[in-house]
Image (cartoon, rainbow, N blue to C red; front, side, top):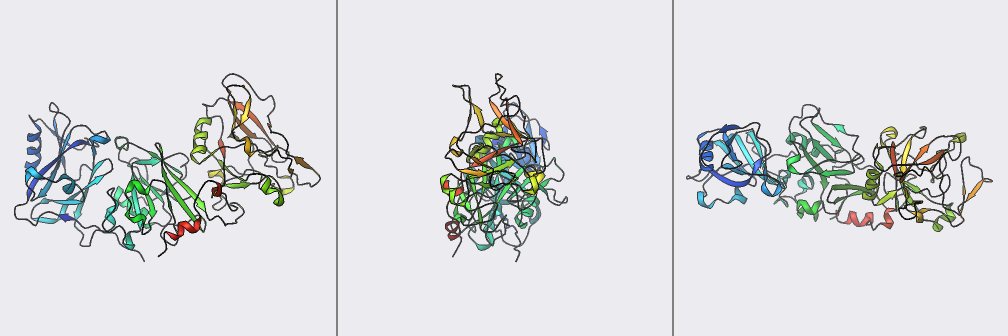
Amino acid sequence: MFILILTLFLIDTNASDAEYKFVVVSGEPITLNASETVQVASFDECTDKCEQKTECVLAYQSNSSDPCYLFDWNSITQIIKSEAGGNGTTAFKVYTDQPACELNAAYLLNGKTYPMYPNDTTQDLWRIDTAEDGWTITYIDAKPTENLICGNFTHNRPYKDGCNPECLITMVQLLAIPGPLTDIHNDAPSNITNWNECLYYCHGNPSCLVVHFHPDLTPKCRWYSIDQIFFLNKTEASEMGGQHLALKLPLSNKSCSYTTEELTNDKYYYPGNRRILQFVYDSFFRIRTTPKYYKISYYVAENLNRYSWLAGCEAINRPSWLGTTDERSKNPMVCNRYKKANVTYAAAKEICQEWDGELATERFYGFFSHCLINGYSGDYSFMTVNDHQNNFYGAYGFSLTQTGIKVWVGLEKDNTTQKFKWVREDYIGTNGVRRNQCPYDKNAQLTMNSIPYTWDTNQPDMSPGNDCTYITIKSLDTFPGYGISTSRCDVATADGFACQTKPQKEKGIPKFSDIVKEYQG
């Protein structure tokens, strides 16, 4: 059953002595483009000019020597407070019976709606809301008759009705834009022309997890499903340039009482049977806040035993064991992931570390082989594309039929010894376990007893500055079919990169059953 989200507008017009007054704050409009400029002798004169003009809803002056800027109805939507970088003085026009010398700014500038004409509270309204970076103004042509629910997804949480059943799917508005690895997106209908429409489109779309509005793009509203987005770049309000972004979260009877900051501070969420489609069954996701990013991590139940995410590996990863079934306990299991992204080594390394891992280590001779002799593509040891559900091979990773691709790996020059060293030598099999290699021949086994360095021809090039490495996939029908080359770290030499992480069960990730319990009852 779909629930229509409407808005209640609380208009202070009941009192007989209500009149237009101005709430003055420190801050500035996000843009001055749509304003009218007048010369004034003081800021009081600036507000007087706004009061004399019926259509004016806001007045601004950067300093006493600058002109006064007047903003009419539907001309400005965002005010940046001084703590977020806004300069100058802004006056909001409000209609209230509060004494002019005792105006309650926190009350009047948070969820209140005001009329252009005192005797008409059904149209030409504007609503002022408190936001993370200041205030927002929303314009309403006609007043709906139904009640406000779910706090209109404003920043000021918790909402009075936030724990009502119809509000447990919420949209969290963030000062952010899509971050690294968000090359794939989905377009909302082209008739969506403003942020409010874009926001509610995502709320009503079960596949949408993150929605982004950019006024200069076509279409303006774009959205991402749970398997398409990993990082949101935290952004200053002054740098948003009319952009907006929101994250959809399924709330429990506990998290519905959180503040906006608490919702994004290392919390786990279960889509379940609610209105967020899951990538695989029995999955959950995590939102973390770092100085640079909001991070979205995706996990599956610890007992899920699908071939591409055997129990313990994060979703969208490929598990790797060193040895056959009875030998698995002798070596650690790691999760492997390719990403197709033309970035520098340093950028790739940062992403892998933000994923709680490192650039990939060659676990044994032939580990990166894509050998396909006689149609055999190895076993769980080789690294492959990361998305087996949607088959977006060319978009997310690299097709198993590609050659010539270059991939950053975690082999770095040691500044002290000037020798190359794998960043995770503990992932390498050196305990004598024997492994079948491609072509599959039980009589042709390799014993893992040394640290591998499968250098390409005429490598390693030890020229100064060549401190990082990549592999080149050279052949699909010979073994090992790849070679390692050195490179500078600050150039985008490679086509992509490969990451490895520990399995989620070794990273302190809660059990799936514990996540679900919060949503039961």
